[in-house]
Image 1: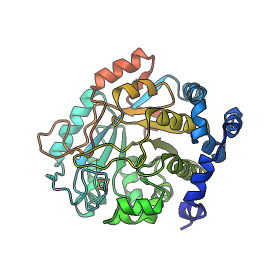
Image 2 (image 1 turned 30 degrees about the vertical axis):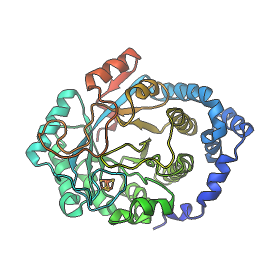
Image 3 (image 1 turned 180 degrees about the horizontal axis):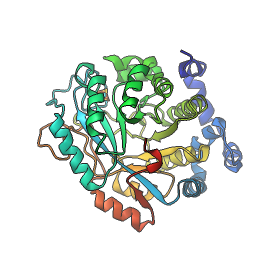
Amino acid sequence: MNSFKHIFNTYDWDEVYDSIYNKTSTDVEIAFGKSKRDLEDFKSLVSPAGMAFIEPMAQESHERTRKRFGHTMQMYAPMYLSNECQNICTYCGFSLTNDIPRKTLSDAEIIQEAEFLLNKGYKHILLVTGEANKIVGVDYLEHVIQLLRPYFTNISIEVQPLSEEEYRRLKQVGLYATLVYQETYHRVTYKIHHPKGKKSNFDFRLETPDRIGSAGLHKIGIGALLGLEDWRTDSFFTALHLKYLQKKYWKTKYAISFPRLRPFSGGLEPKLAMTDADLVQLISAYRLLDEDIELSISTRESAKFRDHIIQLGVTSMSAESKTNPGGYSVENESLEQFEISDERTTAEITALLKQQKIEPVWKDWEKAW
Ligand code: SF4
């Protein structure tokens, strides 16, 4: 298969790193002055030199977002179905060797969770599982999508990478989008943080968005776990991946998320801390690179930060999220995948958005199948 891997392999991490860190304020000025930017401009915008331009970048990001998306914010909720996992990932509470109670929701519990979220207003749902093929493989996912389809207008998944054929199967029963994060595009660092399990195969994960695109899913979400490696270089590779996918699978929509490494019990410290200002710079740089891309922010981020960022380029957000299976309504002892930072209720977030003259969108008819 002719995939992103072939393009990716022509790049050298250290060279990309150096070219970003060597950008000057003149490079940033040139990039900022353009109306249509390329990946070289993106490097300038995310570079340390770009930080001096953060205010005009954020302003342009705000204006472009309002022009393209209006005064709206797409709302979604994650639903964790299972914390079973066969992988070791150094940064995750569900990692195989963590001695935690494991749980996979029954059909009745899934419906209970669905009803809880429906009552809060959610019509877009993101189903999340660990990677345990025998317990939460494609048969299980197909069954859950069929079970939930009458409840939600838009069902997405963030689960183990699947084959093209398996994505096709899930599309047929109503799957709308798949999110798959590379975590880091640095091969050596990737191996350190994914030492065991199917996820330790860097190339298989790297080629997953190609399989999703070939299967014809409506939307693909990509990103890196910010903090595992240099966030600027990882974000360049995410942007490179995005531009490749957009060209090849041009009918598909794309979304980028910005998960920053969050603590879990016994957790990992970021190699390179990313400040709030860094994240504003990055979000603005993506918006200046691409007007159409959906930019998503989760409850990993603090309430204070989210209050500010909702005007600066973000187009979709979650609220009141739980990151353990059954976390909304099912009594159980399962541990969360990572700590939530913004714990405000959906009603509080809705009120905040309205106060900022942004209309929360619960159901996107255009996206309905
Ligand atoms: S990040 Fe995903 S694959 Fe890794 S341990 Fe956590 S649930 Fe499993």
